[in-house]
Length: 471
Image (cartoon, rainbow, N blue to C red; front, side):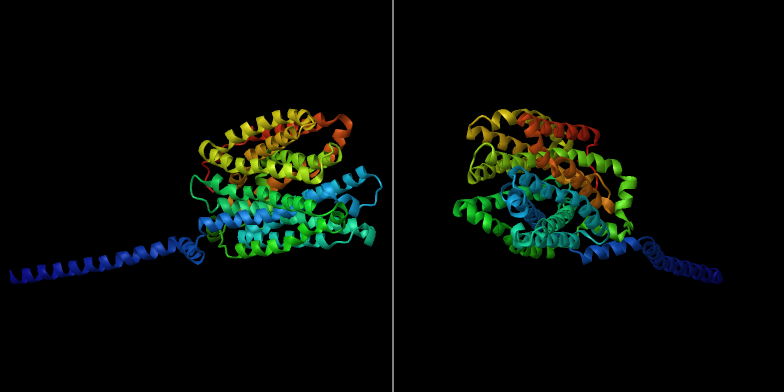
């Protein structure tokens, strides 16, 4: 019996030791499995730890201030093209020929923008959003500042328009990479359900940039004589770009990489050639996104660049009066932008864009009666309607275009769609509007706006709703 008890005790002790060993070993085994299985997640955590998140205020400021500065640079040239670029850089004796030449140089930047979207999109999808945004801002600012010191045709002859075209091309490259990166910076940092609201901040940039550019030209027009303005005054807004770019660079250099891109990097979701991947796998969203953007460009550039030129040269308004009307009207665009973004977060991107496109189609029919009414109130009403609708159709694009593409081609895809739409809706809009008004009057130009809006309406109807899509 004693021997049997000893044996039982020994057996129990051995079993207890075995259980203890199993208890100790099991967590180690699980830990090993977990370590093997979750290597990517560990890297992922380290990546997130190394890249602390951006605060909402910092995201809003950086995405807004960069686009405001870039569009300031772009609108400075657009306004100068309507007022002074032709006589300074082109030798034709005909004022119409000079205006057409100036508008052609305006269009060069839009042809460069898709190249800029491919170039900066490549690095934005492979290296990161932050460094690419810094480079695009720097390129745009340098080109704008150099236009401000470029001698005219009377000083260096044919080199003046040639160098102007080169710098204008550089402006287009920079802006081609700007918007897509700013939209991604905002939407990839946005909390759930608020992507359109966060995507609204880069969409506010054009309104503020336009106000700054035209407000400065208006101030110069009031302080300087026509001779002073044509000789040197028009260069001041271009030169001020250098100071603005320094501010923008300071803000953007303090950013961290977006969490969505950091996660994609941790999962090794990069492709060697994002532009090839984009057009081989996602060409349809690019085309539909570009077509959806056309109405935004047509509304804006017909109501600003063309209308400014037409109002001063044909309707007889002074330069400062029409610039004042534009500054008043663009406030409606700034008001419509947050309203439209809020609505698109609440009801979806498509409903807001469909309503905006339908109203834009109708607005084309108001162009001739309002601009030729002989009333300043009629002109102001037309400009306010067009720019309000620009804000309505433009605001949801800050979320919609990034939502159409996966992370590894999102920078390239959103930028390509945005800038390809500019070729159709904006690059030749002032040029063709000048031709159309000579052929059939303002009603033909209004028809151009309505046709552009119809194209965008069809594209939006073909797109899927993206409000609940995961980035």
